[in-house]
Image 1 (cartoon, rainbow, N blue to C red):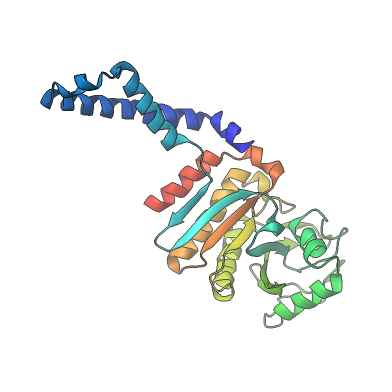
Image 2: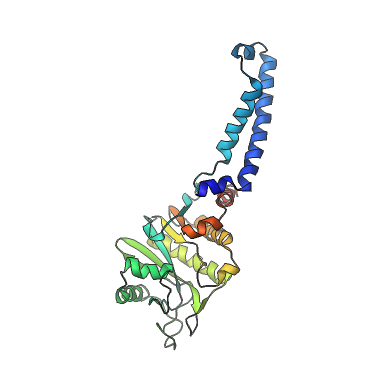
Length: 284
């Protein structure tokens, strides 16, 4: 369980020790001052001070250090960032779907069936490739391609990296963002610069199309893009949060960003560190 893993985290014990000793010092000084100005009052309570003070300090430290749900609300702009472990497609929110610059949809030879894009086809479109392709083509109708007639399996029309095709299905917006470049063998790649620019364009599209409703996103860059060696999972989460917050400070994007973590990835993430990171953005 996540909570037991957090309790074994050194960050938890460091926080517990820091807040505990700080509280013990403050409570001791406060009690001494009270006893100095009212010397006969404490004796009436007959309290074992040697136990009460450490117990009170421990209770305060536990309250301050206990691993709560990883989320943070920001007043300027009025938005919220939350991390959850679960299934992206079970979220009650609009969804972010990562794609390549060709917006291919066929599985399994071009798109992996277990990828977010593959699940998008199977779970939202019930494996109806034609319907998904039609909706994507409709969403891309107003966007000029940068190359056509490319010889490769699957789609032959390439769009600029950062292009977002917003598909609406069953009252949910699916923001399909191209953040990887696909070659003639259907291998994909990207870079941090490309990813940052793609996210900027994604937030612009979310801002204009979501009506402020929450948006849920997977951890971007963990699949076949090759970014996991450059941007480990902990950094990938911070990268996604930073991108969203910078865009939100320029102009509010939506009421909430939900970052969805796959259960198999949860053990690789220091949730307490992410919570500290979210809090640091509130203070900055």
